[in-house]
Image 1 (cartoon, rainbow, N blue to C red):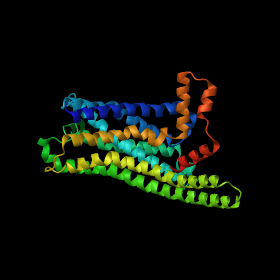
Image 2 (image 1 turned 90 degrees about the vertical axis):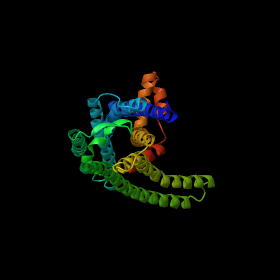
Image 3 (image 1 turned 30 degrees about the vertical axis):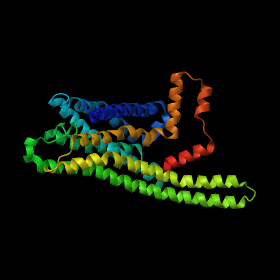
Image 4 (image 1 turned 180 degrees about the vertical axis):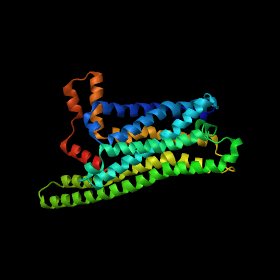
Length: 343
């Protein structure tokens, strides 16, 4: 076994374990908190977490075996099933991210009419569309027999055998449409929604800054260190929304774009993608499943409180210790809730 193969195998194992633990933690939070279940975007989070868990439980082990054996992990039927699951889950996760971004856009830009614009019925319809959209491409792939083992990516995925070059134009059209309706569409929605959110966030920060400066001017007897701390908080508040939105969009581009680019470039018969490069881009796309729980859930105050509560019950800590650990200051809680609505 070469060093690159060993590193790729370790990466897949680590990503799979982290993905399972973090996404199961998100589901655990929902089972333990009625408040989280009452929020409409929770449906999108659940859909995203379920897809990531299936991806980590089905596709990542299959790719690990493909790298370890340098061959098809199991039979043709199994490989076609795994390829079908990958196409469905990949599109479903991307559309779930797009739905979450649109939910935040509506919540921030139309806060007064949010409850009427985003109801449980609307969320169910969006999830149903996501499933229908994903099934359309995965069933098309299955009927056209384009699912199989790809040596370039060491995994069961969308693949056209070399002996079927007569189908290349149709396969290329399918591949382009597949990535346009998943990666490109979701990237467009993410950029549109979060840029609108960022504009509103900056507007809110400017109003808060004006009020803060006016207050500091009135408090002539205030200590200089307090003024400096207030001004530092102003700067931190302005940067916070920008950093979060950069993480939302940047993680999506970083994890998916290399894989999408290699798949599109590989449509040209004269281009050969090196095996290690193909597997590396595959691992990078898998990494999104392990980062999603942190990006969308586990770093938020509500989820942290529920996790602390669950862990404390498991470890047998008393209620006083739990309350002391999970209680934060009033200002921090208000700021976290405000930024959660914005980003």
